[in-house]
Amino acid sequence: MPHLRVILGHHVGRVFSLKPGINSIGRESSSNIVLDPESPASRRHAEISCTDGEWEIRDLGSSNGTKINGRLINRKTLDHHDEIVVGENVLVFDYSDRATAETEAAASNAIPGDADGVQSAPEFIAMVRSLPSKLTLLERAFAAYTPQRALFIRQIVIAILAGGGATLYGVENDALPAGIRRYGITVQPAHPWHDAAGRTPSAQQSAFGIEGASVVLEGEIISDPERFLPRSEIEFLKKALVNLHISETHVRIAARLVCATRPESKHAPDLVKQHIETGAESDSAFHLLTAAKARAICKGRCNVELSDLERVAPMALLHRLRPNPKAGSPSSELDTLFSAIFGAALETA
Image (cartoon, rainbow, N blue to C red; front, side, top):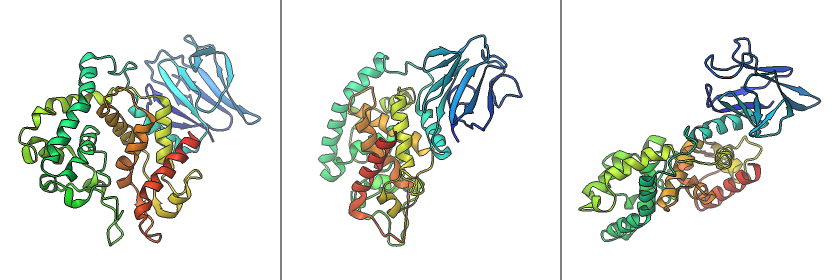
C-alpha cells in the first residue's frame, strides 16, 4: 500500500500508511491524519481515496487550499513522489514499500528547515572556498611524518564534520596514529572486511568520533595544526552542515542506497544478497547525506553532487552492515559491492 511521508510540519519524519477507502487529512481529531491544532490547515482539509487502482486527492473546500507540486488543485490523481502541501505541512505520496518509505523519511531529516540553508552566508562561503587549500597543507604536514597518514587526512576531516557517523575506509591499522588508538577508535581496513571470528567492528568502535580525531589535530602529529585548520572553523562548519541545503533528488537516492544494502529488498544487487546478512538501518540515510555534505565542502563546494554520495557511501555505510558468515569475506570485492549498491540506487530512485 502507498504511504504519505511527512517532510515538513507537525509530524515531520513520520510515515502514514494509506488504507482502502477514504483517508481524511485535517485538524479535526477524527481525521486519519490529524494535523497540529494551531495549523492554518482546515478542520476537514482534504481526503485521499483509491478508485480502480488510482489514488486521488480531493480538496474539501479548505480555506487555504491544497497544493500538489506547487499548484492549487481541487482534485488530482496522485503520482509517485508528488508533494502535497496542506497548510504548512508538506507530505510526499510514496508508492514504495513501507521500509523504503521509512528510510526516505529518515533521509529527509537532512533537509534543513530553513529553505535558504547557509549557502548565501558570506562567512560560510569564504570558509568553504578556502577549505581545499587548507586540507592540502594538512596533508603535506602529515606527509612529513609518514606518507601513509597523509592519505586519509581528508577522510578524518569528513568524519569529524559528519559528527562521527563515518568510517575510515581502506586504511590499514598500522597507519592509525597512536593518539586515536588511545581513545579506542579503530579504522575499517579494505581487506579483510571482518576479523577471523567473522565479526565486523561495532559502530562504536569504527565510527570516527571528534574526540579521537581532535588529538591528531591538536599536536599529537602536527606541532601547530591551528595554522592550517583552526578548531573554531571545524566547529563552525559542523554546525553549518545542518543547514546546508540538499535536493529532494539526492535525499531519494541516499534512501535507495541504504535500501539497496538490504538482502531482502527486491532491488538489492546479487552481491548484497550473497554477502550481506543484515543491511543498514533507516537512520543510516541521514548519516550518509551528512557525510556527503561534509565531502562537498571539503571540495570547496556549497552544493552536494552525486559523486559525493558515491564516494562517501563506504565510509557511511560499511560499519552498519552485517556480513553473511556463510559467504565468507568479500575482500577484494568491496569496491565492486558498493558500485553495485550505487548502481541499484540510481535505477530505482
